[in-house]
Image (cartoon, rainbow, N blue to C red):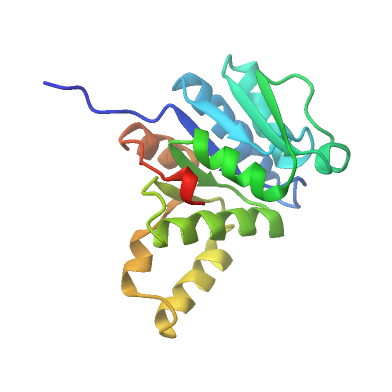
Length: 195
């Protein structure tokens, strides 16, 4: 019997700020530790500040592998992390998203701001356009995913998106449940050359 393919690399979208709720930082730390324990490489935005930095530091401290992807112009703003397993510097934001997409088997969204929402909406949009079928998980940390999920749901209920849009992503409460889900998912396929 052929073994089921497993997730080896996860792109995580999260805030370049810590936010006001300490649960968000704790969740980022727990996700990093969990990815390392599961031997899943973290792919993220390359910063050492905010939830991004907490996530990367926790993954590295637990013996995990971390690939950071950051555009040249954000190296100073997001204070590029100097201690990663690998850092890729891109020319543009689109190149950053494209590179993260290429190397990820799945995507997880943690709490974050406008950039996190942008990355999440874009990767869901690409899946809707059938450019990939990689799993997308919105990790809900004490209600953090509710506003984004409500916006996506509103697009369906107002008739701007098909009912099938609900199948493009999952909302999962808490990091332990996200890690458990990742352990049972198969990596999706993508067409990076069409992006």
